[in-house]
Image (cartoon, rainbow, N blue to C red; front, side):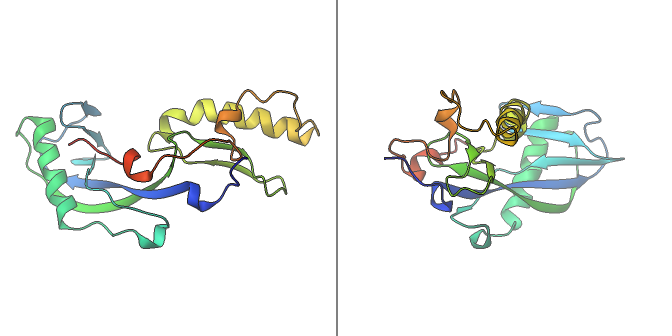
Length: 179
């Protein structure tokens, strides 16, 4: 028996992003794997750096806003990225959001509720990386739908369907973050 798509198949998490101002900040994008951080220049003496403290909830209204812990974390990450060579002031911390599916796979396909609603959600924090491939899949499925060919004999993307079958693992198992 397939699962009906519902918000209970996903959860939302924050992906905080801080903007910092200061001298001697990176002038090119930097990805620091050991620090699990990146710095992206976004203007004269301003960089954006991701924060690790994240919250999760069943609905976006239940998430905690960024706080002092985020500011301290981003300053520590900047020091790791630059080898302690940069002093900066946190301008602000923006609360970005992403949805996560319970089984770790994106939810991609037409809603089982009908009406031609196409779902592309549950990208598990890597939507930016998956976007080109998922857009290609989605555009093909939507074009077939518009041409009245929605019912293909074999859907090679059934593993991503909102109606996919199988047990869903506990969210807590999927939310472990190594620091």
